[in-house]
Image 1 (cartoon, helix red, strand yellow):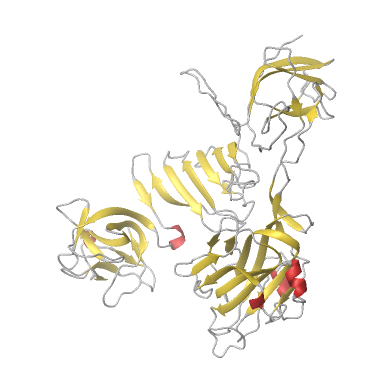
Image 2: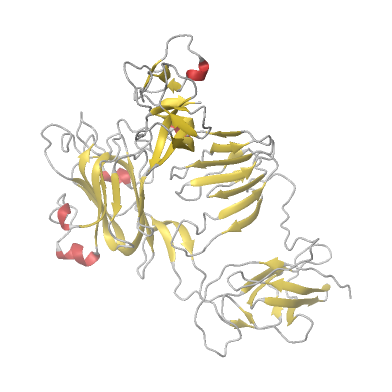
Length: 568
């Protein structure tokens, strides 16, 4: 009999439940699966697989699966055929187009119905949808068009509440939106007409009722508040009280998406976000017989095992196989010259990211659950070694793959081409492929650079000592103190050398921007393309520079009418 020795280390995340004291071991268990192959490499059905505790003839106690308690899953609801209603319709853009799952179709209210339109004909414009049953809401996504809401609420009714108020599809919202429960509120949000991104299809407001957070694209001054965690209801409403379109006074929405945890009543589902393990904590026979595809699988308590495979066509043993579940404490030890764990990926290019390791938290209540795990990937090109979230790289086309769910993405990598250390992200919550703009980079030679994502207001700043003798404000223009390399003073003259702009104040701490984009305090006329310099002795403002100014005196270049300045 030919003896083959193979050692495997498998990791699986499981769940803890309370079991009777006489059970061999409590979950979570390690999971093991394999395919028995013949000498020709073909699967062997009907083979016997006997599992012993390592070095003994004591059979391991095997189980079919883990006990998940109550199986749960979350999903985006399929609302394409759901009952819905709207307060009004304009330009034949019906409410159905908000839920039809088609790109660039939308609902619009009638014109002249909302502020800031002069003499609006109503104070509320709304759209509601029936989720099919009372469900626990995890998130609601509202994707506005140009006529975006400046002030709006997300509201909810249970099935019982809707029945009590006689909710029907009649344009009355059961007596008015004020009778619905408010679960989220946005005020002073960016207007869709002037907002750089909020008006675009696929860039949605996200209301997260699990973590009580809200993500509003381009939001700088508005407030967004979650009032209820994990609210339960059947009917979801978006109720707008102020639009951003002065000319038409309407509100328009591309899509409304609802993510929910499933309850006892089945509801139409679009895609599953996560699912816990099924409840299969049942002991299974030992030995196991391979299935029609030569495969076998089992759960077992952490430990070392000998696995013996026998069949008329093949016989072998895998001895000293270490099976662990990281939810149960376990140490991997090795000699000082040997790594305790080596992860090896295939050599050829793939379209799956060449994931060496995926880290997830099945059934968790945050964004870390599948299908958006943290990944460590090993590639041939610039993604040489990378840790990502909600992002997978296609080596065959050198592009990021389409995101699995609507969620932000990031990459932290060692560039395989030039060995630089880089961080980048795509902060938009869409299903499109992420655009991983590199925000921070340290080259192999130690050169550092930073930039603002998509023309934002951020950049690279350093903390300095305030040697001006006065109180500084964000946007003030100062110069580096020649007698103190980490201090700043007031400018000493027009076009003073080594200027900087105060980027942030934190109590008495002062930070100046050394690379990025922001609006300095300016005096006089300033136009796009102007170079800015210090105004004069003692002034904390900038002015447009004349031609031929000393480059050492330049603060940056004005890039927008709002005087956003690119600081090199």
